[in-house]
Image 1: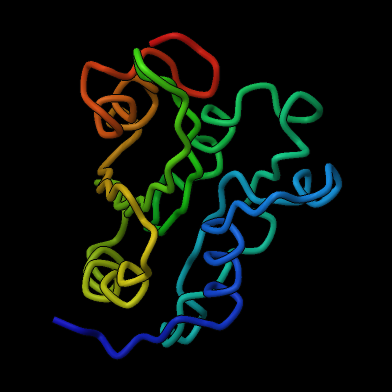
Image 2 (image 1 turned 180 degrees about the vertical axis):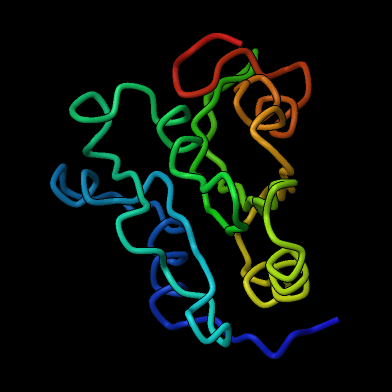
Length: 165
């Protein structure tokens, strides 16, 4: 069921910037988003980039020690969000980077919020380049990085963000 919610142009720009990994200068790489949250606008008609809810590649090792843990802390405990997370992981064979779309719908979120986010996610999910989709219903589902490791490649994933699983 579609809700009639549209995707703001800034969301499309952020998505395209995260999807394209062209060779860039160090400064450009530092400005690239590692993770970003999207929310509904106040009038519930558009999916927008949530202000100040992002992690830049340049923050890692500076103000952000562990990007995955920092990302989990950005999620609101009592409301829904969409998120894009640029996961860096290793399998037994190689290093990989994949874009993960996360639909955050915690049990404690209001029912109306869960319904409108669930019925609007197709608008944002249709972007090409998302390798994995993950619906998360609470901190217990997401706080352990090994859960994302399983989503990315089952038991062949040996590390996520440089940390062993």
